[in-house]
Image 1: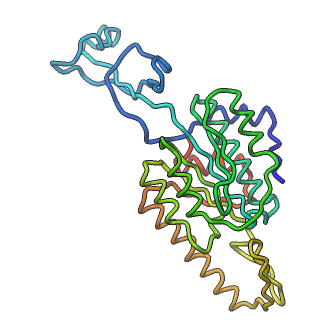
Image 2 (image 1 turned 120 degrees about the vertical axis):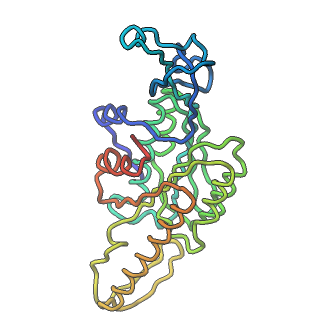
Length: 293
């Protein structure tokens, strides 16, 4: 069962972060500020030399007094971002210490806090074989408490159907935004159709694959019983060096396939292991793949 367990110091540190989105456009305006009209905000980015025909009202006269050249201010107008945190709670997410589900939920809560601190809208979706729970997107401090309550106490159960869950979700949403997905991607039916369903409807996607170290590098050998957490199927086998070598190769092929697919369709992708400290994931690795800045 998920326990978030954040302290005030950690939450304060999160306020220095911001989600990176491509949903912005450049315009030539001066004198407006964030929140000057619903759904938009302005952030100064640069100066541009004045050209005949430009509106003289946007000239920076203070700069002219120093340089004796005419410049206008260049801003970026940013839409208020709608962020959906989409979490796989199927039975395979119960493995690991902490469990993959707990790691995913704590990471999702952190990113939701970052977005809400920057005045964005945040909603949530929990799925296994189908969409199960949804948190309607909202802004404001009250949504932080709703989000934490939504994630607190989650438990893993059931089989997963990644493609069906994301396809159904995308069909029911009237407006696209940023989808941040947390899953181990261990669905035998794949993940491609679900991601493409979101992408075809204009969603900007970040995919965070959560795995435990044992799934990448098993350290057991000899006679073992392998149990599928979602079906309960049991297989008795002997893990020798040859089988482990083949297993590691299959894992490499699987992960490389995900990386290749995401790169082709411009989906941000990162792999997280449950042994990686959450602050390191947030302040280092998610910045590296430009999910955060």
